[in-house]
Image 1 (cartoon, protein in one colour):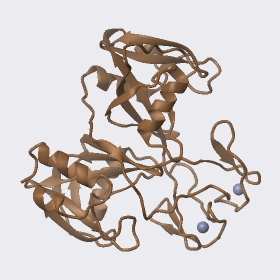
Image 2 (cartoon, protein in one colour):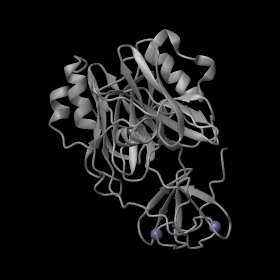
Image 3 (cartoon, rainbow, N blue to C red):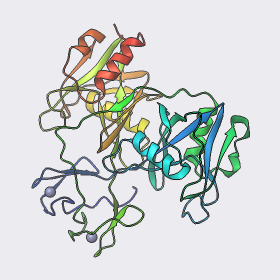
Length: 344
Ligand SMILES: [Zn+2]
Ligand SMILES: [Zn+2]
């Protein structure tokens, strides 16, 4: 178990009418806000020019990774999509505003639990990077000259190795709406109910009474694109859920300690009874309050369908799926699966 899941008060309205849902998920019966204990989302860019990648040397004063090389990146803030955060961080750390090309596979670090979402990006020919406030140096590295021993974080190393190996990432990403979801504002300590002040320099709000720190970030989720016998598996979202009455991929919030691929496979099994391996990153969708990494992979078994999250389940041809009223990134994934020849 990572961290303490205790939550006794609504962080938005201070009510103590807070009910647990699932393991690390609460709903306030007074104001309807939902809250999760989730990994922190991080986003950044790999800017590539002539098979050289732009890295920044972190300042000697940084708490983590001081003096070592990283990609320009940082925490996704409430209201941002990961790619907006990646561009903002690259502006702040490397003095350039890149154009995002593709979403690369997310990486996970477990302690503290971060989901790192890297993007492949490019600059216009006349843009030259320069070190920002948190960096001592910026430099371009040819793929065969990357200073592997001086990389700050294992997630950067893993993402860089994928990039060098030619990992394609995906251009299936985009902004989605969460029309039914109440946005949480962090005004009360969830643990002791004390009113909170402004965030500190690190973006965390600390309770003046019990010192619990909270970061307000979009919540990372993961979904599974399951295709069996050339049909896509969708669920009709139950009443009371975000997107109620619409068809969607099985998906849900990451629990502490999970990678997005693990979340995707777990949610698929819990919501549909289908057991599968999430071995391919296929898409990324985000609103200002959550981001969803979508995976695909081989189906191993089908168990009895549970009830709850979905009021109904179905396997659909491409034409059938495009005719449904669908939720979040599902329409783009259906179009992608059809264009890739995966659906009848
Ligand atoms: Zn509330
Ligand atoms: Zn407190």
